[in-house]
Image (cartoon, rainbow, N blue to C red):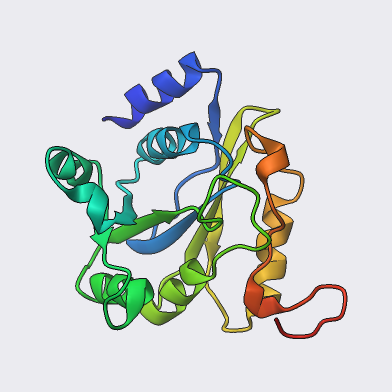
Length: 195
């Protein structure tokens, strides 16, 4: 789908895009908050609207016949959760073999309220030596905003402060399902102790 058509479809639904895609060939997109089944479609349309051909991850079981080939054409990458190195290792290896690659993720890992984000996006970016690009979907303003490329420093708490600042005030389609923008590795925010 061409960017103009994707923007047109988003506009028909009352959504608009804000910001521009970074001019870097490889990065991880963090799309949030993820509170609804429609988020995947909105995220795919937004990526195309920004001119990004993003890939996404799915359990290998959903890539079976008859829909497997179709899902791969939509940018789906089957992942095997029990392989050595895990999903993070598989993604780092995929980035290592690609001159150009954009991977889109929803770090909550679920549409239900979660107590924390999954940290895979951060470890994938660090392991692959690529930046993280934050994208927010705000239902009240019906705006999908792409932020600048954040190069992870390795200081997870400091980097997550930047992430929290970006998503502050953003409300998804079902805001009651959105959990805190926090990684388990950051520990308890009240005591500052590790998780």
